[in-house]
Image 1 (cartoon, one colour):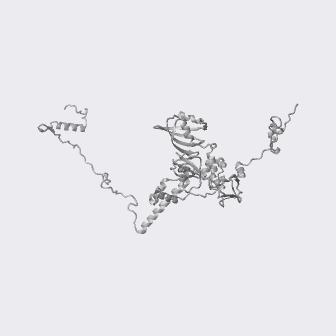
Image 2: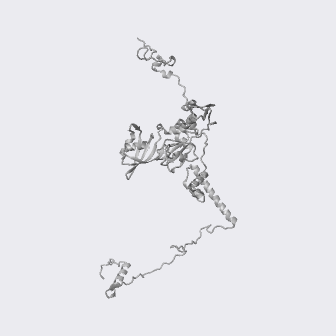
Length: 472
């Protein structure tokens, strides 16, 4: 029986060539016989249970985060702007001036920006934005085109976009104040479905669209599975509903161009569980914290590092301020705005509606009823104080009803008797026949009159009714 010996030398050519020139303490130690041999039967029962590993979130907190990411998360600036601030000497860490952004900080470190400590982190929030066409999804455009962030309301905090939409693409765009959440929702591994409404020039069949279910490779780029449904044909254009989960750059347009279609309108309808619905173009609507937490789930919330317990520092403006701002935009006076104040201003605002829960809807209805009852009571009290009596039409309904004299229908207590003509019938006047000598007497007039009377009286008993062709 021979015993195999393990050498500490690395396999390779002769000694001296290809040797590991690193320091002896940095070389990899050779495995021993116990580690080399595989597990035997019964070893798993003998092994002691391994200690539970710490969660990834706790491990990340222990390691800390890059300082630029921390500055962006609290809403001061973007990561690129944070790096520029550090190069300009505006950031201090534990009393020392930073010169490089390649620094990791933890919760125990003290960071000062322009001599002031970092603000507290705000609660994780999410907004729905109906992006119109002609806006670029970027903070600054080198070509000077209008951007999405220039059209957002002033009461919003610093927000980030979840993904991007092209300048000619419209529809739903998600906004958030948490960079970690934006990053997680953008990942294809999250698997959220993005659904689009597409209008394209050209002809296509449902069989052609079904070929996209298994993915497609175009110019060396592999696109994942795409769900496409042909809705209708309108002239030379076709309308489709397209759903995808990756969201690569210009994915919808490039895939449909591969099928011979030219996309001329693209509308995003949904992003995961969040729908565009009836959100007006250019408006922003915030998702409630409880709804956002339920839709994300524990896994995504933990992966994104979302914080739903932190306070809110940038609260939305009250409705009164929004109402006055809308009136100023409409024409600089109270009655010229979209939500103008005045007698019918409340009705206009109420007709637009807003999102409410069932409990809020019931409380709002009860509040309106109580306010209406209170207004009626105050009106009656003012009338009594001024000496006015009750209204004329108050109390039970009056029997007599006033009707306009021009009305065709009159309501009277007694119906008007109808005239009974009996056997009297209208007799047409005799016809006048004009001849060469003037008026000629119609000798058949009496015969025709008697025949018409017989027709009105009905057929004689026991016989058929007379016909016009019968001779008397």
